[in-house]
Amino acid sequence: MTKRVRHDIHELIDRQVFRWHEDSVAIGEPELPRKPADQPKIGPYVTISRDFGCGALVVAAILSEKLGWQVYDKEIIDEVARESSLRRSVVESHDERVQNWIVEYVNNLTFMGELSESDFFHHFVRVVTALGTHGKAILVGRGTNFVLPADRGVRVRLVAPFEMRARWVAHRNALDLDEARRFVSKTDADRAEFVRRHFHRDVADASAYDRIFDVSQINHDAVADAIVEMLERKLGIYAPGRSSSVAAAPSVL
Image (cartoon, rainbow, N blue to C red):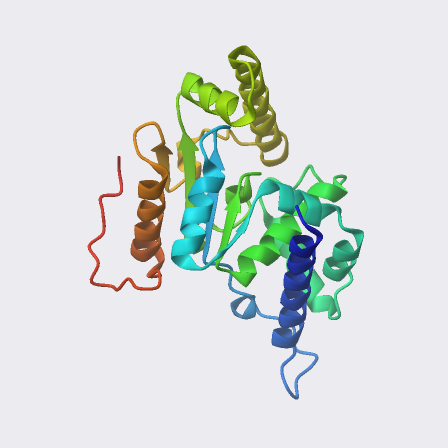
């Protein structure tokens, strides 16, 4: 991860905070409280959950090329959440009503009640919310599909048989197959525990996704194409070069 990427996200969040600030102040009526209808619109976005070794970043890169959207993987989001200067830009915004909207949104999420002690996770949710509000974001992993409103984006999950994933990880990382199996198993368990601990959900729960793809049966390009078609059907968003006359594919595998 480069410092340039971290700086770009820092600037994006800062711009979003200022945009919330500007939108919240009505000319001539600076004291009017913010109404629910005036809250920033979240989306469009795509979240990609995955079993380890399914090539989620490959799908995200293809999708980014098709849509012209930015990809935010878990490492970038983790780094953003640890930036103290970014924390100040979100928490100490220039308009208290902007901060209150973020806090209210976070507090209203059903899984947040037991997490007031977790500074990292609260900040993580705020960052994801800001990225979602900026829109045109592809977020990979870390349970981001549980943070953003389901009706404002497309949420997918990638799965594949364990042995196939282990072989792919072994090949990509020059590992012994047994070592790759242990690595895949541990990473899957860690990711499932993250979702279980913070969101109180099962990462494999099909109801949390618009569609689940078995990448042993469908290649990455086809997955990206299907996601683009889902954006068309669900949100009326078309990739550059595509039109509303494009026929939609069936929504089930």
